[in-house]
Length: 248
Image (tube, rainbow, N blue to C red):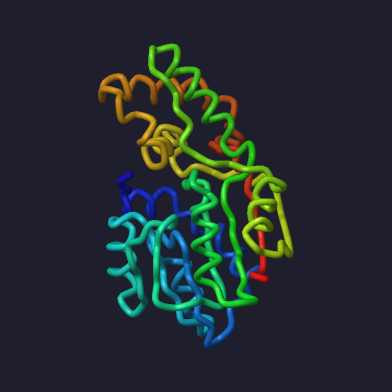
């Protein structure tokens, strides 16, 4: 999947802004080695480094890594697949914000995190949980099927129990879990849903001609917007899963 790093920073900065509080869960310390898995454009990587840690940011998107390197040239960034990466260091902690719901091969990424942590190393993770953006997903699926296209899910939104079990089976101790609704304001009042789908849902439309895609996005925007408007603003129905764990 190709990412528009500029659109991400301009209209979807909430992704990393909401990640600030996840840093509190990690409690990074000076001198620690930390891996930021799915670092995006590097804003949270820089905050981890500001605590005195030595941070490596990895992301599968070349566009995101190019942006991160240009804005934070003093930090280390690398294009890497979260399910199959190999770095010549073991870390004190792995931090990951808004990434793991993109990875359906969840056991592989958990194994990579485990292998790159020291004994006693920490995880601080947040990503979409069960029911995340359900109104957008349900409306898009219905509109696509009305127009003769097959909707194929692309995200992994687990329940707390399901993901905690995966971590425990891999050798982690789950220390803390927070599963919560987080209504998220979309920056564009007029076209926010369409813009959101252009940013995060391009894979839904790989087999859809551009004209049909535009019609689908317009219909989804028109039908869903009244349902998710509050005080004149659009709010996507985000549900987040946050987990802290330790390698034992």
